[in-house]
Image (cartoon, rainbow over all chains, first blue to last red; front, side, top):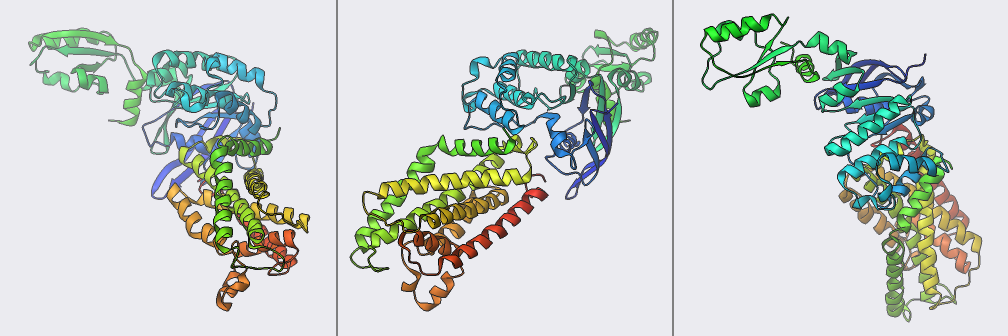
Length: 305
Length: 251
């Protein structure tokens, strides 16, 4: 079966910066795929190379089997990209913007589909409003609509929910999920890891232009993370030295709350840890068993011990 | 509807939506030039026999409007799209670099011709022009607009900020246009500046365009046509090469 996206040995250098250092990813049709990584990891460069916005120094990229350089017309027709930047053309209304975008793909009478997208993205009431007059969240939704006007089977969303409020985010994801159920391949980059965990069946993590993890979300959670015992000690309580070594990785939220995370190989260990704390005279303010999440995986992959 | 046609249509719509700025204002500026220069110089300057200075001036002003507005259209559209980032909407679809070039240049020609016609219409009240060779008028207007449209594409791609584009326009395009014989015949210049003027391609555009009105010109119209035709081919090839390699657009 033809891959929705095939990326082979892609490298890209900007001056002294190696943005992509040999990236290989194959994404099957119908997948909901997450591309994660810290800022500057190369996610947007990879998407740009896929969309033909930048040219890779070496390697090959293909969309539904069509090379993005030699068969760029077919490849671009099959790809919809929602860019990270909130860009718009201030000369036109929402509907004009979508009509023009349809025309760029050679689609003439696209009114019905445009109406459907506007409805799904809750933009119908704003269809004749100039782009300048829309809020940031609405502009973001128009960007999504623009990426969909030509009904591409592969849709890439580069941080689509940045700056979008919770309600709109929910609506957007429900629409994207529907597209995925209808058979569209979705590639998502996001800094909201809980979104990626909920939505993506497979995830690749990029660091300094290299893939450092690539697996199903479930496998990543199993491989890189474990259940944890999260404990908050009373003020002034000192952690016994025997337990220092058992501390798991620090996640950003723990640094704020002063919580201690103990990695658990099995639930039986909970008793031992609590017993040690009691014997050391530590008073416990709060206690919780935490299931593994993608944030832990991300921290472990990006900052291996 | 092909990508090319939509891009062309969008570029025309873009300037039409701000017609006061892109059409009415340059027409008014040209009209002011006509009123002031013809008032001051009418009695003192005579360039061709049986042609008043105001009549001589009008084709030059029309062509200047065509050229400057054609350049402005493609260059300002591209720099705005680059600075605001919405150039991505044109780069993502399957529009070839040839279609891209053609759409921007043709839209630039349309704006140039619309402004030029506006200037011509407004000057009908002042002087009656003979229109001796209308085909030459059309040919030079279209070719001149296309050259400046292509130059505008180059400037728009090259410039990273509005300041650089303004420098391109104010230090190259405007001097070349003003020193091309819009307001005078180059034979009224000292020999050295006459020779220098022959290196200015805009001189040939203005001179050939004026030939279409009066049937007389400073140099043979065929020579002007071949020079600006060569200019167009060279600029087009260069612009197409820039677009094909993705210079500053697909870094």
